[in-house]
Length: 418
Image 1 (cartoon, one colour):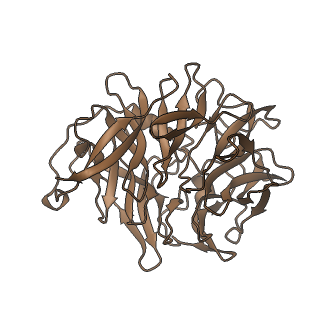
Image 2 (image 1 turned 90 degrees about the vertical axis):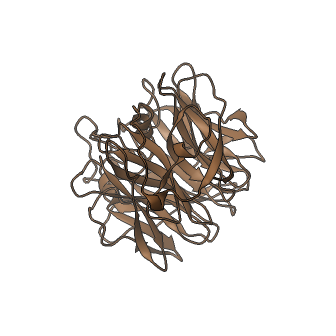
Image 3 (image 1 turned 60 degrees about the horizontal axis):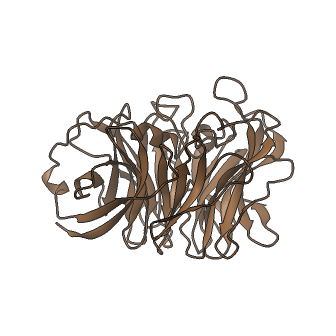
C-alpha cells in the first residue's frame, strides 16, 4: 500500500525495504554524464545526523524549519520515530510497543509529526499490516499498529482512531490546518486481501483516511475509484489536496492496492495516471502547495515491483516520466521520486535492475537527474536515497558506509554552484 518494497521479493513496500536494499549497495564506478547533464549544479554540505546507537537510521521528511523526521534504530534492533532539530536528537517514543517510525514526508511547520507505531496489543488476526518492512526483526510483526500524531505543544505521541471494526492504522502526512492523512482498517473481511502464502497476511479491508485533530481526533474516509475496495492517502497540502492510491486489498503494501494513482480534492477522486503502463505500484508519494505531484509507477514486466518508474504530474502537463541516471555500469533502469518542493525540485533514487547500485538523485527541472554523490563535497559515505527536499533546497535521506553497511540519516545543505 503503500509504503515499502523489497526488490526481487514477493512483497515490496513503498519506502523502507527499498532502502534496506540500497544501503547494502556495492558502488559501481561513476562514468561521465552526457554533456547536457553536466551543467553547473549546486554543491551540498552533507552531515550525518546523530542516532540512538543502532546500525540504521534514516531521514524521511524535512520541513521549511529544517526539522528532519524519520527513525533511528536502537542497539536492540528496535527503531523509534525520531525528530532532529538543529541536529539535536529527539526520541518520539512509541505507543507502548517496541517500534515506531516516521516514514513519509510530513512537511508542515505547525509542529505536527505523524507516523506509525506498534502498541503492546497482540495482532488478533495475524496480520502483518503495512509495517512489517519498516521495522527490524524480531519484533516487526505480532502487534497492532496505529497511526500516531506528535504535537510540539503537547510533546507526547498519541494514537489515531481507526474505522469501526478495524485494528490497524497508518499516518503519513499532516498539513498546517491540523489535518492528517493515511489509511486505516475497517471491519470488512475482504476476499481480495492476500491472506495465505509466505508474505500474504492481510485479512481486513482498509480505506484512505483523513483525521481532523482534536480533541477528539475524528476520522473520515475518502472515496475510491469505482469498483475498488481499498486504498491509502499518502500526502496532503494546505489546500486540502490529497494524493494516494486506490485498488484492492491485496497485501496492504502497495502492489494491486496501487492500481490507480489518485488525487482527492473538493470531495472527489481523480485518477491522475489513467493510462499507467501497469495496473500495480502506481503511487503518488508527495504533493506541494501548487498541487504538483510526484511518485512512481509500476512496470508491466514486474508484478512484484522490482522495477519502478518515477513521474511528476502537473495540472497543466499531466504525467511526465523522470528518468534514472545515465552512464552507470551496471545500467540504471529503476527510478523513484519521493519529495518535491515549491520550486519543483524533485528528489528520490535511481538503481540498477538488481538494486545493487542505488544512488540518491535530484531532478532539478529536467527529465534526467543528477547524482547527489557527485555534489556532496568531501562527505565519505554513499548517499543511497533522497527522501525529501524543503523550499531551502535542503535534502534528507539515507547514506551508507560502504565499508560497514551501516545506514545513516543525513542532511544535505546547498552551498552554491560549481
